[in-house]
Each structure stands twice: as structure tokens, then as C-alpha cells.
Length: 452
Ligand SMILES: *Cc1c(COP(=O)(O)O)cnc(C)c1O
Image (cartoon, rainbow, N blue to C red; front, side):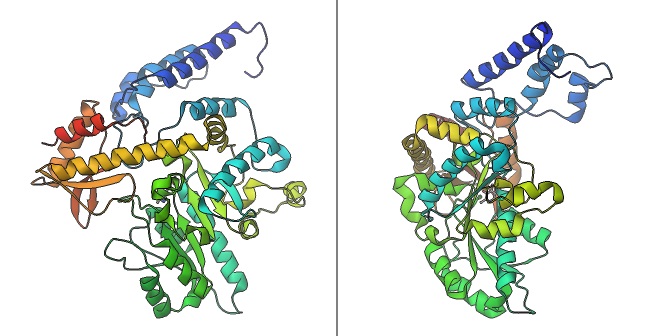
């Protein structure tokens, strides 16, 4: 089963089939949107795929190409505007193949120094965008959920280490616009989340934060989470005033930029992030708005030693790693074994240069601005909230929740677009999340026409 001898023609053929399929998928334009099937439909179409003898690579590949892949939505389709989509550059997608073929362990410097070196340069670019010092750093982790959890675990470890005997800070403050993964992290950590009422624009502000901290006792808090681009609306908290209050009370300031952090690359909106440079930790998912494939979150600490103190695993068989002073990415997050998941992102950055990233992010902002203006100009539609980034939320006057769902289902059944409704304050609404530079103004117009 292992090994690739010269005379193994069936393996050589399989190699060609797999690489050809991948190349063809990357070249597809347009990509098919596809649609999901029910378990019964897949049972009927694919049946039992794993047997004692195996079906052979060619047959398994055919099954994937003909049955399984078409039952997966293409997240890079230009009219896939649900949740937060993913639109990898061709270079990053190609390099994911290389990472898969290379058997790299990227949890330690000893085993993966070349990969870690390159990943760290990609992290450096992000640190510079945030405005963090040379000494800052971290690691690429699977996603924002693990990134947020890891940062909060480090924050708590630091706060408890510094607290006087008998005090165990256990609270986290944020708004209800924060991502669900913050509540999930607090659940995992048995920490208490205290909500701060946002201002009129839905933002966490220093003023309100301070009231809440004083009400409960600032010494009971180990972290404040600000969001740089909420998932549902793209709202950026007032980072400057929040950071100032955190510094006043000596509380860890975490900025969740899983989606919106990418906007730091766009000069036209950089001012919205003023104050982000004071964060103690920061995350951004390159698999969202920085054009890398799943799964990839950059987790960065102002003081990497705080991450290391909280996360380094100790075991006899790991001593050779932990006793060295090397940069071991596994030391910065929950988890040990690590794929070099930052390399596809690094390869694309190295290939295209950072200016191309600024251009691509600006492009999506232009299309979002177009969508906003187009919605405002249509009688039957109405913008909800204020748009900071590339999420556009709007109302179709006269529609019930069932109407939104039927519209969404119909578009997917036609493989025309994938746009699920959202809810806000009990109301069902339409929502676009535009992170794909290949989404055009014509796509937006066609979708809005379908709501007339
Ligand atoms: C998507 C998102 C997350 C979670 O990231 P995953 O990669 O899905 O785990 C966290 N915070 C925000 C603001 C997000 O948009």
C-alpha cells in the first residue's frame, strides 16, 4: 500500500487522475454551485464505499467526482454569499496540494523549521498591519474558534498568575455582537461572560465597558473581547476606547478579527481599526477574507511568552522540543499535532505580493458599496444597520420569514446563488457577505432582481 515503485502503473495512473482532477477544478470558470443531497439520496447514489478488498483508486476517484463532490457546495462560487464564504487564490489552492504531498510536521521548529520560518513571515505581515511590535508572534491554528479559545486561555493564565493569593479572575466582557465562539470558549473554560450593552451603532465602547467592569469588580475579569468586524453585520467595535479601558485596569485586550481583520489590508478603511495596535492578542482567519483555503486562522500574541506559558505541553517524549529555545508553533494554542496550514497562504502572499491583497480586499469593498447603494435605490428593499465592511444586511418589505426561506431555497435549487437569511432582534432579514473578488456588480444586480 505504501511506496511508489517505478513499475506500479496503477499508482502512476492514479497520480495522474488525482492531479488532473485537481487542476481541472482549479481552472473551472464558472465553478458549479452544486447542492447538498439527503443521506438517503447519497446512500442510493454512492452506497457502501469501504470494503475489505477496496474498490480501487480509479473507482473511488470517479465516485468522488461524479457523486460526492457535486453534493458539496462550492464555497468559492461568486454568488455564494452566505455565512462567511471562502475564496482561495489559485496559488493558495495549488499549494495546499504541495503541503498535503510533503508530510511536514509543523508543530515544532526541529521538525518543520522551513515551513515555520515561512509561516512566521506571513504572520509578520499581519502583525505589521495590526501595528504590533517586532517581538509579537503566534501560530496558524484551525479557525477562529480555536484561536479565540487559545487567546482566552492565555489571558486567564496570565491574570491568575498575576492575581493576589485567593483571587481567581473568571470573567470575560464583550457585547452580544461577539461571535458565538466566545460564548463557546467561556463554556469550555467555565468562565462567565458578562454582556456590555453596545452603543447606538452596535459597537462595544470604552465608556460602557468601564461601567460594567466597575459594577462587577475589574479584578474579576481576565479578558475583554472586542470584535473587529462582527459576523452578522461587519461592525467594528470602538477599539481605541476599549483598549484604553483595558490598559487602565490591566485587563487583557483580545481583538477578534476572524472575518473583519482582513480589512486592515485595505487603506480606504484602515482608520476604522484605530487602537487595534494596543491589543494583547489578535486573530484573523485567512480562510475568510484573505483568500486562503480552509482551515487557517492566524493567532497572534503581543507577548508570545504568555501564549507559551499557557499552552506548552510537557511530557517525557517531548522534552527534546520543550527544553530547546526554538519557536514551536504548537506552544501557542490548544492542540499539539499541526499541519503547516499557513503555507498555502504564505505561498500566495509570496507569489502575488501584498499589494495584490490590498487591491483584492478593496475590490470586495467596492462591490459591497455598490450593493448598499443599489438596495437603497430600490423601493421594495431597505438597508438595516450601518455597513462598515462587506456584510450587507437588508429587508425585503412585506416578506415573512417563510418568504425569505422560500427565496433562498429556490435560488439554491436552481444553483443560481446561495444566500441564507439571517435574524436580528427577532426579525428575519437578507444578508450578503462579500469576500470573493470575483463577485461582480452584475451578480448583485441579478440577485436583487430576484427579490422584486
Ligand atoms: C467566523 C468567525 C469566528 C469563528 O471562526 P472559525 O474559523 O469558523 O472557527 C470567530 N469570530 C468571528 C468574528 C468570526 O466571524
